[in-house]
Length: 482
Image (cartoon, rainbow, N blue to C red; front, top):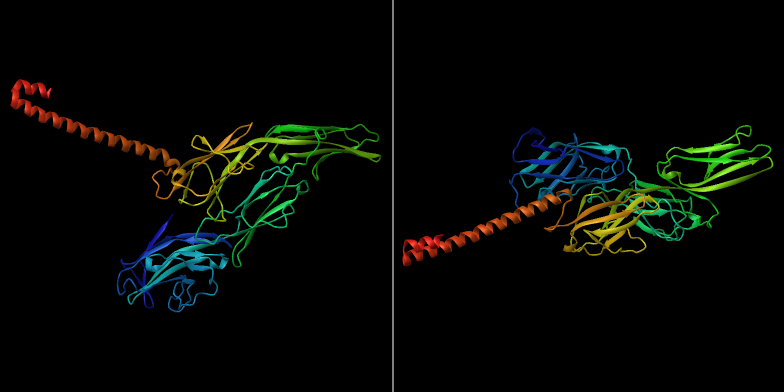
């Protein structure tokens, strides 16, 4: 992170001159996507001149080239100063200049917000100071969207946990609200980032949409997924073909008819290939490297002017766990964090914590949680990938691992729970280093203790030697001293 330290002063109308008593630190460049929020951390210092501890301090953020005496600031904590109507309610001076903070929050960023901004501080009769060309704000196109985690294939009547994740970087920004739409939902639609869904047969090939909205006139983001509910077919009705991801597969359809039939391969409502009546009486469909999305019901349709017939098969593409991650929900926060392997998570004692292990695989992997080498009982037997800690305690600090067991290969993802102020905190890859340091300290402590005991022992023996010398002469003394 680049830090810009400026010692620029504008006095009165404002000729710039250096003054070592003033300093400000802030990022040189800040970027935010249009419609979203960004937090700009900022600290400052100024001389103790003409004010006391009870003297209020006022801060002002201005856009470049604005006259700090007459122009309206984009944000200020001075209740007697009007702010720019274009930034009112969106720009907020979150920091208190009285405590050397000038941090700024920008909500619902607009294209017109792009540019350079400088800060002014006023306190007492002497401190009236402008920091020029402080930071540059870039507003880029909105490309971020939510992610929806849901099993690729759903079973009718079997509940699953559906999760909508929107990566929200700054806790100082307002949390978004979540809403869901889709035919698979009941009349009471969820308003949280995750919920339990029990799919039905009629929900197959229907849309489920997660919408993320922000306060005020902010943008709304959405992500739509297509539900795939496996139909319950009697055994033997439709042949099932299993293939591993990446395998080569060739499906062959043949029909004997007069006049010759037109053949076609259909997947869902898509026609994949077809033949002409005057061509070969067989039609092949090649899948060079099958993918997860190739799963489904393939139908060969034979048609001529006298009628039609069709045969189907169910293709199931199997693959081991992929994209194994942990989605974390802390306390009452609606925004979830997605963590990868080796991540450290800082939590407060007494805080509630919910860890959801998510992965994509076919057939679904068997999920389980372990702490160290001890396997933990699932918080929800119907969903073993969920681990809930209603009140985090000191003894919970350590490594937690989610295991995804699968016939084609297993995966695991580990994270370290750290409690603020706890000496048992294991911080990711620095954990072994911490253990080595503790061992080294322990060894040094033992050596010091042994040295101390040896000194005591030698001291005692020395004193005994002196007594023997006095009582029995040189020979006894040599015997005692060894």
